[in-house]
Image 1 (cartoon, rainbow, N blue to C red):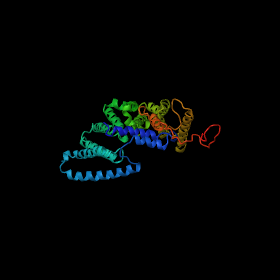
Image 2: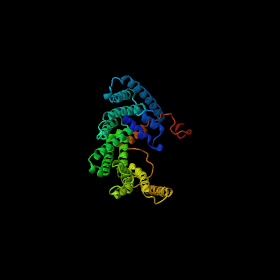
Image 3: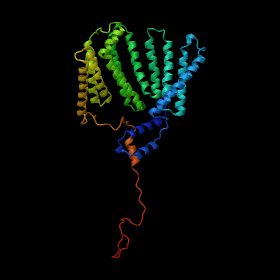
Image 4: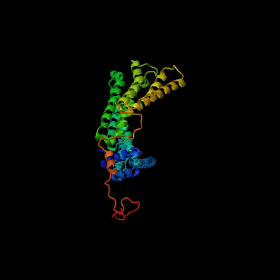
Length: 389
């Protein structure tokens, strides 16, 4: 299903793992030999070149689609004018498929801009088409965005598109559950919490399978989105503000069973940290540390016990003390996780890079030619021996 050459993708994974090795483990000559033996034919650029090609492609697409719109505006009547952006999006997607297959672009700026422009045109046309469906408008749009972004994520392994996929899925669940009436409104935060955790677990399980090795970054992004939305769905500030907006209540209106959301707001970041330490999950660990700050700010928003300076000082001190404690705790590796810097970002069990390096470094010794002097350092004679020994 993925559009890119899988042989080159496998070789690219080998290149990435080779680059992640410590300098003392492999010499530059050995690294170069490995990369020459496993070539990658993708057309890739540096970050600055990607930005330049992306901007250039965006300008070309804007001018081309604008000119095309002027030409085709009379063909698409007012009732079917929403088909015009869909037509332009399909054209951008056809150009994307052609250039990736012929020019071997791989996340080089050109293909990324074409990907997002095609998605934006098609989604814009669909939103325009279903604008009259007032009650189901957001639900239909979320479902369509999810289906389209899921296909594009699988096809092109785009990291940001995978984030859109998770966000649109949870958005669809949000609007669909909200449509259940009063029961849906009361249980909406918990339904979104369960759905977000499910997204995280599914992405985590998929990331451990060999079939998903080309989507490692996409699945990490999906895990991150699921965890962030899981916390946001039960954060007291988010629930209170969103509930007031949906129910047309004052901003200061209390929420039923508010103490439950305060418990989630305070304890869930620490649950992330603890789970990250036990399961060797750096995503949970780092995100938990960030959400501790979010919990402090949430508490500070509703309870002005201290001044802003004192609250920031105490919050920063708590985070600093927690970080320092974790560092001291992990000085000696525990549960398979350590504070020491890792030499690899990801380890793929089925790509034995260690064996590859050994094969590159171990060569069959060749006997040196006989020069007539085996030890060197002079000659002597006498006692029946020759003058050369």
